[in-house]
Amino acid sequence: MPEQNKPFIVNDRRKFTAEGEIRPDAPKDEERKEAPRAEAPKPAPEPAAAAEPEMPPPPTLEESEQSRAAYAATTDRLDTAFRAANPAAGAPPPINMERVVQSIYMNALLQLGAVAPEGRQPRIDLIGARQTIDMLGVIAEKSKGNLTPEEDRFLSSGLFELRMMFLEVTQMLARQAADKAGEAGIPGAPKPGGGIVT
Image (cartoon, rainbow, N blue to C red; front, side):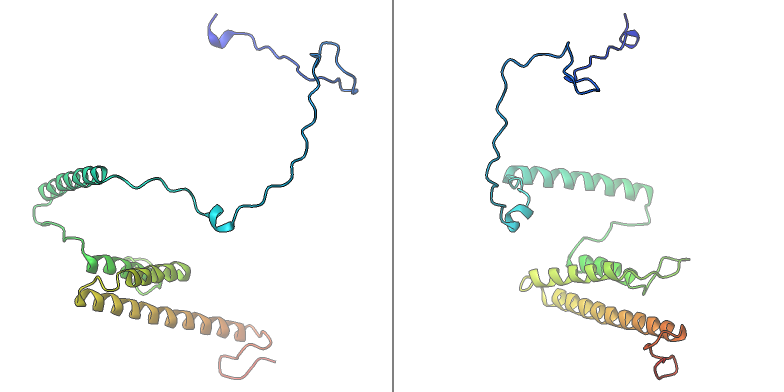
């Protein structure tokens, strides 16, 4: 008989009937197990230890080298295919510290609404901009002493500009919110022309 046409059989394994009586066909428990005793609660693990997931071991030197070689071979094939399809495009520029900073900087500009894709209205994402600026700050902190003077100047200038722009945008948004509250006649809010709504 094919698997799909087998009859479906239901076995009722409940020990009690709907009235609470023991069913006559219920299996008998010869050995009654003792109810497990309540154990003393175990102390909670330290919050820091519980929050950190166990990390896998780092790759071996051989695994790292194989991965790097395979990555390089794949990117070479992609570059060759790209140049064959677009002969006038040339080779893509190498990734260096300035390119990394520039990429993060442009992303922060998008999030601050300073630039927008063509045909779209600028949108402000303050939380995203803050995280992106903080990310650039971490890079500046962790790379201190390892950058060329040009890279260091590029990074510190970009970080300064983004932080100042963030302050300007947040102050502008706060003024707009206060103006709207004053126009709406909310008590205690400043009026657009000066003074306080009473």
